[in-house]
Every structure is written in C-alpha cells, then in structure tokens.
Image (cartoon, rainbow, N blue to C red):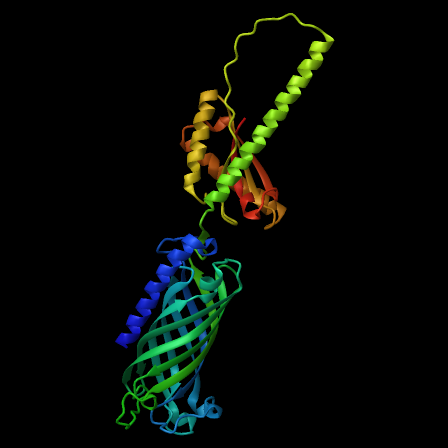
Length: 385
C-alpha cells in the first residue's frame, strides 16, 4: 500500500512538472490557474458489481463472472476537484449491497458492505490533445487506495483500485458517466479468509469488478481560461496602428489634391495663420474577453486603456467605447447584449480612472467576424473621438 501511494505521488509531481513545460512550449496546453474553489465536482452513479473471494481457490472463469449469485446492484457517490485540466483527485464511496460468495445460492451470499477510496484522476484527453472546453468525451484513467468494510461480517480490509472513467459532456456543468473499476482487497474482506499460507498470492485476495453509470455535476467555475496570446495581441495592435496610419496618409493626400484644385481655380491672398497646436494621433486600444464572458480576461490590458485616458485628458477629447462579440457563436440578439455588457465593463474601469462618464460614447456592435482567428472578435475597443 505504501509503495502504491509513493508511486501515485511521483506520478502527480511528474505530471505537474510536464504540465509546466507544456505551458511554455505548447499553447494548446496553456491555461490560467483557477482559484481553489473552482473546478470541483460531485458524482452519483448506479453500480453493478461482481464479487469473488479468496475462498474460491480454483479461480473464477469469465463465463461465471456475471452469475446472479456473485452480482448485485448498489450506488456510489464522489466528491472531487481538478487541479489542472489533466490532474485531479476524488474521494469515492461505494456500496452497499454485495455478495460474499460461499455458495451458488444468491440468498445465502447476500451481504452489505462499503468502500471508501481516494483516487488520482488523469484526464488523458486534455493531457495528450490539449484542453478544449467544447470536447464531448473525456477519457480518464485513475488509480487509488482506501478501505472497505463488510457490515454483515464486521470485517475491515485495505484495498487498491484502478479504473477508467468516461465522461460525456452534456453541458459545461453536467456530464454522463461510464465508470469501469477493478478493486482488490485483503483476504477476509468479504468475511471469509483464505487458508493459503502464501498471503501475497493473488488467490488470497478478495476482488470485485464494477460498472457504474450516472452523472457528474461541476461546482463553481467548470472551465479553464486559455492563457492570453500576448504576441497575437501585439500583432493586432500593430495592425490597427498600420491601418490608422494608412487612413491618415490617404486623408493627407486627398487634402493636398483638393488644395491643388482650389489653387488652380482661384488664387487666394496669403494670410498668415497662427501655428496650430500639434495634435497627437492614437490607435484604438483593444481589451479581450473569453467566450460568452463579459469579465475582462486580462487586467494587464487596462494599462493601455489608462494611457489612452491620459491622452484624452491632454487633448480634452472624448472617448468611444465599442463592444464586439464573435458572430461564430450565439445569435444576433445575444451577441448584441453581450457586446453591450463588455463595453459597459470597460466603461466602468475608465470611470474608475476619474474620466467623466458623460464624455464616453458607448457602442454595442454585436457579433462580427472581421478578425482572424475568430476569438479576437471577442473584444472592446477604446478610441479617441
């Protein structure tokens, strides 16, 4: 038992180290660490279990594994938490109607029992293919250790368990479970010890195989936020500046063309004009959001907003705050409402900086698809008016 716990701890530490490397080398594995109260879950399942005991010294043929005198129905409940998209822990209770196989008469074999295990969960779907909140099926092997008690015979035993949990996501909060579990326990767990002197032999152990079907309900935050791609955001800001400079160049060229036409048509007296104060030109600032969220994804982007607010004060200018949503998800009405909420969230931050609310124009642009990739459309722009 002690060796297994050491192995599980080593696997957990190794995976955590690999996960950190993945976050550096591969963006698909990079997520923002959530708070301790996020990513908890509870599970409830109906369970069908087949039992066989150490007293069956000849072993059990597969054809007899599911005979009625060794099977019974029960239930299980579990509470767990995902610490990363790939690594979690759960505490699982299973019981309570079992069989102590002493004959082929199921009424004589009837007993009551429970098991309590702590299990380490490894979501291979997220570990191998990266986190994807839209994924339907998650493949989750697990291993653990715990204790069992046969209530009918007042027998306790330590045990080990391994299994595969398959979750089929019905929504971000609810998933359908298919859990296949194998447990092995010390001789006498079912109330009948084996007389074999070789206590380490598999034949001296009590075992059970369970198939469970039920539901998972996720508590609190049920998803993980992707790490913001700062390089992509910088590239986007640069593209906005280039576009603004191109518009400014076009406007200057058009002004020169019109001035040339006016000069050719009617000479005008030269009038000495007072030198105009130089006007600073600033590109719009973008603030990005997660899917279906109106909370600002990264507060570091608010520094750019603060710089633009300071510039607006210098020029005695007003601001235009425009909210957008991704038209690839959600209908038009929902996206319009979401873009308004996102714009309002940024306006609230600007007002906190001491900028007058009446000098801010708010626009809800709804769903758009003018940026690629599509997640960059989930944003708010702040510009001088």
